[in-house]
Image (tube, rainbow, N blue to C red; front, side):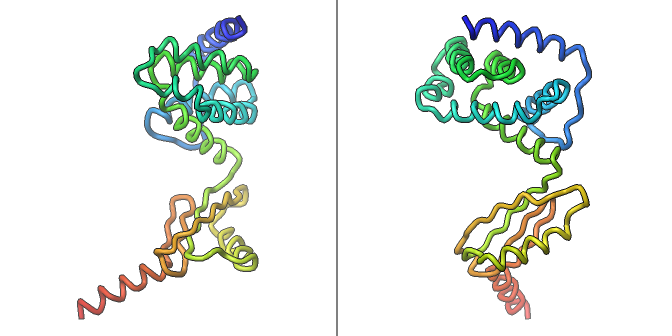
Length: 207
């Protein structure tokens, strides 16, 4: 009953949103998941609940990882209506907003529940951009010590605008041998020992 009532509220909300212009997202995420995430960002922005929806999507993400739910929702042989009901019943217990509930309804209606995780990821990217966060991935062969990590963060700030902040992720990859590979925003810098060796090898062969 709770799921049914929430579903009706969600669809009423959806109809009102369609009549209004979309709020432009801070970044463009391409693909089908990008279109769903953009519509979700617009709806949440108009209701001033961007952060709330982001937190609710965390609950949705957990549901997807639940074997009992995923075995039904992600199974291509299960009827679409049963998938939708399963997800609706689970979300009703999570007490999410009509906006988040409506997202799942629309995905279910369009047979797109399998891309739910991709939509959540796309929305997360939009929220990071909204907060002025710049994603940065640093790959090294060995873990960085505290001093090196601190120096790296200072150096990376040189790539940022005044309103931006770093969202840093470090990865380990022993195959690069040494040095580091830095990916920040749309910039990519390969300072790995492996690449240096490959360049040197190529240069020797050409001489």
